[in-house]
Each structure stands twice: as C-alpha cells, then as structure tokens.
Image (cartoon, rainbow, N blue to C red):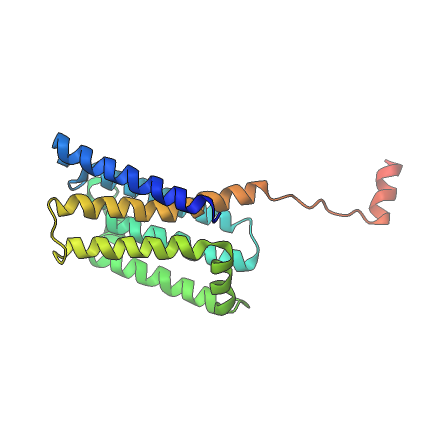
Length: 211
C-alpha cells in the first residue's frame, strides 16, 4: 500500500493535468458546464458508492456496518447536492422531498435516524475512528474532504485562475472518486469473505446418516 500510493498519486496528478490541458486546448468547456460530463461522472460515482456501501453493510459485522451505513448516507447526501433532481422527471411527490426545503428536511431526518442508530449500538466512537485509520479509510476521506474544500475556494472566488469552474468540477470528480474506491473495495472484500459452514450437532449427523 505504502509503495503503490505515491505511484497512484503521481498518476492521478498527470491524468488531471492532461485533462486540464486537453480541455483548455480544445476549448471543450462544455464538459465542466452545468449538467455536463464532469457532473454526470460525479453523480455516477456518488450513486454507485452509496449503493455499494449499503450493500456491503448487509454482510459485515456490527462495527463495519455502522461505518458503512454512514458512508452510504454521506454519498447519498452529496448526490442530492450534485444531481438536478428536477431534470430527472420523477413524480412530483417524490421530487418534493428531494429538492429545496424538502431535501433539507429529508436529509435532516435521515441523519437524525442514523445518529440515533449509532448511539444505540454498543460501539464506541473511538473504536470506529481507530478502525478507519487502521484500514486506511481515513486517508481516502481526508483527501476527499481536502479536494472538496479546495473546490469550494474556487466556487466562492477566493482562488481565481483562468477557467475556475474547470478546476472546481475536476476537483469534485477526484473527491467523489476517492469516496467510490473504498466502496468498491468493501464490496469486493465482502464477496471474497469466506463463508463459515454451520457445524452439525451429533443428532443432526445421525439423522443425516439414517436418511
């Protein structure tokens, strides 16, 4: 992990620089416009990550389940921020809960339920935090948060290079990719987890032989 991380970061930097140069040189700035390619990629990462985290939570122990449910909710929350629900064509009743004040109320209820769920579990917060550092998940979360905060600086005009929206949207693509990678790893780990066969009791064994 430690040997591959610098290579992965270097490759990511090179790829991002190539993308930036290609967009500027070609003038294809529609890729980072509202509802453009970059925003669609972000939506795919977030929805996929939310589903993978949720699926992984079903096949893990309590500590991991609490963590994975929280990550699924985090990605879902970000997806509501990034996706223009009004353009999807959902029934108006559902759309009401996913846009504007309805979205705020929906997220408030969901996060309140999660916090209540978390407080009812016999899992200490320090154990969850320690696990995130032990598994390396914290690195993905901290890097993702750093990229999103940097993107917010571009969005608010505190950093003003040429084509600030290009940098903002590309930073968000990278940030959401860093949320998707652990989700993919978690579902792979769950699928590869060895299944423990139930141990037959002597009575069950005798019945089997008798049959």
